[in-house]
Image (tube, rainbow, N blue to C red; front, side):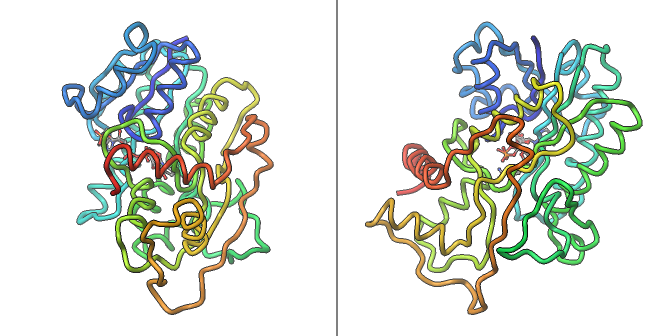
Length: 319
Ligand code: NDP
């Protein structure tokens, strides 16, 4: 079978390509710049790549850019979307590539020959949990929750807004065009890096180990990149998979994350103080019910943290 992965050089996508090749798929991988070795070398080295990996050049903001990459595929995994926080023009840097880019990819899918059975889109918990409803240890967030774009705009949460609007647009488009779509909605993704560059979610761990004095007063969900990649494939392969899937092994406050790091690496220099003096932002829960049907047995957070740190060390992103 042949599948397309958009944004193949990215953190999650690199794992997705690796697991797809391991499962025997032929992979049409889109990258922005196929000539940049930093974006492709690690993919070309994967087992099976010589025989079954084909690179395509495509940009989210160029209409029709993905036509060739999705043509003739049985499935499409759309992961490409910018994920970083230091933006000067949120519309141009985050929202347009996320929203117009998703519609661009889905547009190519709707034009492609009818071979495409399903499109799996990498959405995010950012498109689920940001709606002003209380979040505390008695609350279980699940797939019925949707983030509120107005609240995102008010709080200038531009990345969160980009993912919320992109998923909303994707559901509208796929309903109109009768495309079978499933979304995967992970929280912060960690675990080993295959690519040579540092991505935003792994950087959150690197920052804790790189001598910062304080830690954020925030509680986030975390999940291992291998579980996220596997969930994408399962969502494509299992015919009854449908709708959205939240992916969170555990929600912890940064203070708890640091406790885990302290136990694993007692001699490391970790921040001692919370960045503000306010009460800790509470944790909450995320339902694991629906994702069970994808056969995901989550890698525990402790192991995910350890794998991340080992990988960050090996790649010299931390001392
Ligand atoms: P990366 O930054 O590693 O990957 C992002 C990918 O998007 C890169 O391949 C990048 O290409 C591509 N991209 C960005 N802009 C464009 C563009 N204009 N045209 C074509 N490609 C573009 O991030 P992740 O692997 O972490 O993220 C992948 C997906 O997962 C995103 O949709 C993100 O929102 C989602 N996600 C990530 C989470 C996380 O914690 N990591 C959590 C939840 C969701 P290039 O390499 O050329 O820059």
